[in-house]
Amino acid sequence: MAESQFALPSPAFDSISRVKYSPTNPNQLLVSSWDTTVKLYDVGDDASGSKTSEQKCKFDHRAAVLACCFSDAEHGFSGGLDTTVRFLDFGSEKTNVVGSHFDAVSSMVYSKNLNALISASWDRTLRLFDPRAATPEQSSHENPERIYHIDLVNNTLVVAMASRLFHIYDIRNMQEPSQQRESSLKYMTRSLACMVNGEGYATASVEGRIAVEYFDPSPGAQEKKYAFKCHRQTIDGVDHVWPVNALAFHPLYVTYSHRSMFLNPKYPVTLTFSVSYNTFASAGSDGTVSVWDHKIKKRLRQYPKFNNPVSSVSFNCDGTKLAIASCYTWDEGEQGARMERERPQVWIKTVGPEVKPKDWQG
Image (cartoon, rainbow, N blue to C red):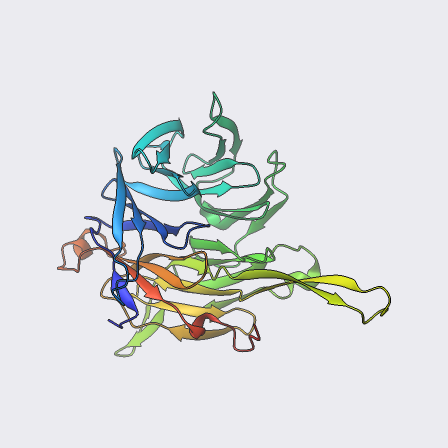
């Protein structure tokens, strides 16, 4: 492995379902696993030896954990096959069940704007929870199919379901979706991530393809959407296609102001600009992680292959590190599980200019 990459201590005993960095602390990382645990790490810089990473606390569940997220620096949430939604207190290392679904909790996001958790389930519902309330569950919203993934940017929630269905909600009005779509991809949705600039999202399938979509329903905006093949390889004349298990957009999103006298020197105006890399990482069952610039529709970098499939990836909030979960993802069923494999592991990679767009001037 490269010097800029290291493994976290105390790895999971079973496949890793999710790695999720804190939105405010670049060193806090949650890791959920099929071994029924969620772990909080303080990520250091083990490669340089300046600070060693350590597991800060662990939360046990009754069944495999499929989803986790932060609410703030001291708290988080988790859910999985036991159908419960748990509120995690990092200080006391205690959990509190704030509600439940009728089937597995498959995905979750926290909204700062609502001060609420949004959880999704195979029971076809979205549920909103506020752990501060006497009755934490605030509302429940039916959907037409099992929910596999959700992601949130600003007030826009994207819901990826079975049967290749997508709903887009404004979380300020959850009574009905603002848009209903069908996936541009022909096979089951495996992963989803929203662009940090709020313009759209990327989604990927089990058949080695990624689609880039835009929220604006106008014909002009919809003409920009596209899909491409990835995580494929020809071996001995045979085409091998792997699922794209995870997507993550680089978090850099900078807003800055500039005083201009261009229009009238006597009355300068302040102009506000927002810029972002808008590049994203994809991870697949082929054991590779690639970085893409979706504006120019090109791959910027493919990192060296891991010994196991990659199940989840997450950039930290300042965009300097990428957490990569490497483990068996059950694409080959029980037969694949019987093979001798490297233990599940979370790798921390220090990222550099390879995540920047080619024309970046920042």
